[in-house]
Amino acid sequence: MNKIAVKYTRVSTNQQDARGSKVEQDKHIEKFAEKENYLVIETFTDTDHGDKDNRIGLEDLKSYLRLNQSIKYVLVYHSDRFTREFRNGMRDLFYLEELGVTLISALEGVVKVDGTYDSLPSLVRLIGAQEDKAKIVKKVTDNMYNYAKTNRYLGGSVLPWLKVIKGDISGVRCKIMVKNEDTWRFYRKVLLDVIRYRNIAKSASVNNINAVTLASWLSMPELIGLRTFGKKGKLNKNHNKGRRKEYFTTDSPVLPALLSKEEYSKIQEIRRTNRVKSREDTEQYIFTNMTFCGCGGKLAGNAFRKGKRLHKYYRCEKCKIRYNAKVLENILSEEILNHPHLHMINDYEFRLADIIDEITEYKITLKKKQNIEMDILSLIIEGLASKDTASKKLKELKKEITDLELIISKKEELLTEEQQKEITEDHIEMLRFFLTNITEDLIQDLKEILNLLIRKIVIEDLENITIKF
Image 1 (cartoon, helix red, strand yellow):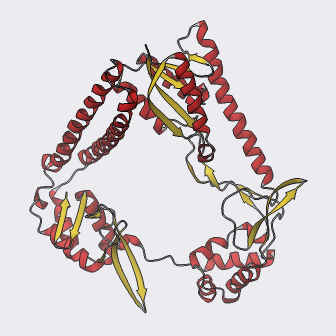
Image 2 (cartoon, rainbow, N blue to C red):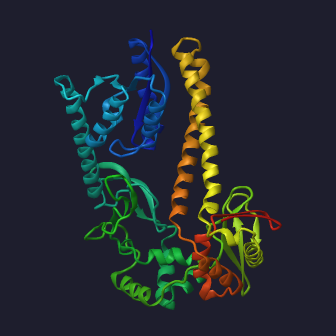
């Protein structure tokens, strides 16, 4: 009799996925399952690092096993596909053990963590996987920082006065960055115009380029041939990415220098005294972050200039419909002030009732879907339905269950937030005052009150508006 199992595959990057690494893992697992009489009824997968906590596919796998406790086996190609971090790996293996589930590697056999003599090989492999990961990261990082001391191309965008060509460094064929003869003179003129006019915006206007983009270039050491590396990337061990405060800069020029050191110093002085003004502050749009179109898209404040006049509007990010900002804000202010529930929003139970009702309805629907899934799995185990016939329906149910769990989680977070709010009659009176006395200096205070009192505004059209307090 076949043993019911699920399989888990993982690669670290999209590039590995594109090269078919997961496909190869699938082939080995399927071959192993057929040989050892396992019936694989579901697949879970991740494109993420093995030392990262809470990977989406792995969390889905754990939730699925918790709901379907008749499944007792998880198949992987190699134990390092399941984890490359010892502590997290042990935690997840203990979780499987509590459910009575066994992790089995197609290459290594049963992965045990029960503290017995037989579990020692598995523990050694888990520790080895973590050490291997650390060695790989160190080797790649060291190599990249060494390459950054040259003009070797390491991926990503290239500054417009440079170009990438095939070349060699120390006899090794690779891509390198060199002077772009087609654009060099133009961008040198743009930067010299900043010095000439002592004005960043003026140079951008004369040369028809974006002023904010130009301003971002002016602080780059690359202008004098130095090279920076590691400015963006992994910030911590959880692979959260962003802009690092400290990064590598070469001691001497390795790239073609667009400016001399003297010209660069002059530009830095101009930067300190002449900042480019950014576009209109979107905070001046009163109802941003809470207003949605009937199609489901969020309405965001925007503007365009015609002659000397600035035209402000709200635009749906999905269907692109626009509403004049002043007209819409006046209508919404009237709708809020005249809403029959405005005086009731300091009533705790009234304010939370809608959210609680929504959570209850979603949970009822979720339970129905889970019961259907359990019924189908029971039929497969009893041999009354084939895996091939039921697999499509099981996948659909899995997606629906995952979506419902996500919605419920977000609703419960919202409920917690609303429970922590303390809304008084004074807040309601402040809202009335601000909406009837809107001035530039009061807009930020008004937005804070609106965000406290109003959850969502849905606009089907200007005559069909729903406000959720």
